[in-house]
Image 1 (cartoon, rainbow, N blue to C red):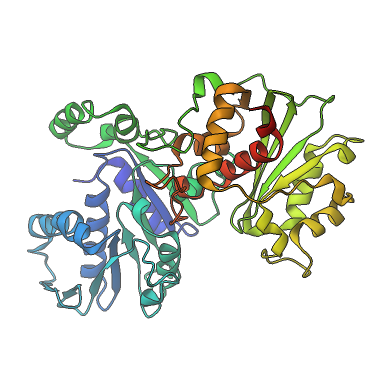
Image 2: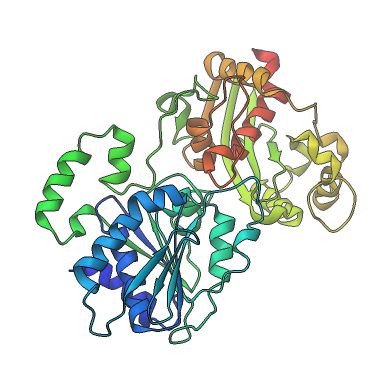
Length: 430
C-alpha cells in the first residue's frame, strides 16, 4: 500500500526524536498526495480530539485535487475502521469533522495581498499539518501554520509534512540549494525524502505515467520525471532576451588583480545581494556573488572584505540601489546604508558611484544591448545571477514582475545588481 519512501517519511514524522519537518517529493508520481492524506486520516482516527490541517495554494485546487485523493483513500482503506469513526465534511467552515472529536481544517495558502501578514491563520490550534504542492504557497503562511502546531501533540512532536515538485522557489532555497547554489545544510529538525516515479509501488501506474511525462516540454520533463531542482523554465517575456547561457556563462572567469573590483549591491532585506565584477572597456566579467540574509550590513562588509585581496580595498568601486541612501535597512544607526558601509570598510565616499536607479524599460534596453555589443562573461559560480538572467520576466509595460517574493523569479535581486553595474559603468561603451 505504501512505498518504501512513503514509509520513510512517516517514520521520520512519527518516531524520529528530533525531526518534525519533512519535505517529500522530487518528481511527479511519487505518491505525495496519497502519503499526506493517508497520514492525516490515520492520525485523526487513532488520536481523538486532535486537529490537522491540509493545505494547498487555493481551496479550489485543494478540493479539485488533494481532497479527491482524500475521499478515495477514506473509502478504500478507512471507512470500515474498527473504531467505528465516521467523517462529516462541512463545506461552510471548510472542515472535515471526525466522530471522535478530531478535525481537519482545509486551507488555501497562496499569498493574499489583502492579508500579507497571514492574520487569518493566527487563531489556528493544530496537532500536525500536511501542505500539498507547497511551492505555490506563501512561505510566510507556511511558517505561521508551522508555528501553530501545538495542540494535543502526539508523542510531544509538532510534525508538518510538505509535498513539492522541483521549482526555482523558496522551497528550493530552504531545503535543496541556498541562494549561492550550494547544497543546503538543513536544520536539525528538517529532513528531505526524495521520491521519484520509480518509487511508486504500482508498476502499471509507473509505466503509463512515464509515457505521459515523456511527452512534456524539456523543462517540465526535467522537473516532473527526473526530479531536477536545477531545471530552468523558459519564459514568454524575459527581461534579458539577449542572454545566452552558452555564450555568456563561462567556467574560466577569474579575478584579475590588475583591474578594480566593482561591487554592485541590491538593498533588499532578505536577501541582501551583491555581485563582484571587473571591467576593461568593453570587457565586463562577473566573477562572484553573495546573498546575505536579513539585511545585515556588517555581514555584507565582511563578505566584501573576504573577496577583496590585501592592498586592493582602496581600488574597489561600489554601486547599487540608489534607494539605499535612505537608510531603509534595519541597522545599528540612522546613517545611510552606504555611509555605514564606507565606515565598516574604511573607505572614502569617493569609492561610491550612485547614479539614480534606471527605469526598468530603459535598463532593459541597455542591458540587452550590453549582452549583444559588449563582451559580457559570467562565472558559472554565479548561480543566482544566472538564474535571474534566465527567469526574470517583464509585463506588457516593460516593468519587471516582482509582486511576490515567495517566487524566486520575482525577486530579481541579482539581476538588479547586474542592471546597476551596466547603468553605472558599461553604458558609456554601448
